[in-house]
Amino acid sequence: MIYSVSAIPSQPLLPGQASRRSLTKADAAYEEIRERILSCDLAPGSVIEQESLAAWLGSSTTPVREALRRLAAEQLVTLPAHSDARIASVSLEEFQELHTVRLGLETLAAGIAATKLTPGDVRHLRDLLVAPESASDPVRDDRSGALHRAIYTASRNRTVIQILDSTWDRIGRYRVLLSRTGTAPSCRTRAHEVIIDALERHDSDEASRLVQKHLEDTFRVILPAASEALQQYA
Image (cartoon, rainbow, N blue to C red; front, side, top):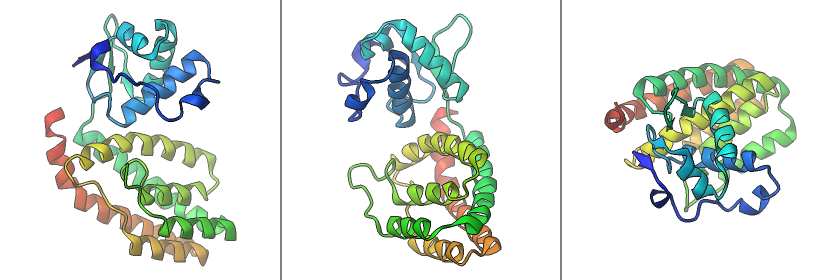
């Protein structure tokens, strides 16, 4: 698919428009395009014609080129030589690879977090546990995702956090695609409760074991649906 001006939504800027006005043109283009990729508004595998994209954003092509180079470094865009940019494709193989990375690092991060968790961290996790799901966007603003991010962030290991942030962003596209089939993973409150209990006890081994089991159980449930949903992108 090639996106022309007419094929791109007429209102490109999201609710964060006001805050983005203080960004450079390249940064603003990067933020906007990235958001559209992660939400699958720009479909996986789609070809993007830079002049049309620049017109949609109301900018020249220079900021767009800079933004696309940054997105290529994040593996969200491919930049073939002598060709238009293309939104990174999705595949069952990549989905499984991302799960493997997430499984290993979140298990590790939970064990580290258990040794560093503060009372404030515990309160934050318990608040997230009972926070209502977003009715308008349950996939991109979900309680489960917020909890997992809060747990690995509590590890205070900057390298682990950076890699998991990037991994979660890339997994986000799969969550959006799965939500369209009605099979996106939902928040499993009891599983999260026992994880938080172990973290509060500063039990590293148990926290790691519970996170690993929770992720393995969730992946096992959603893998058949993911396989079916991703066939159209093969």
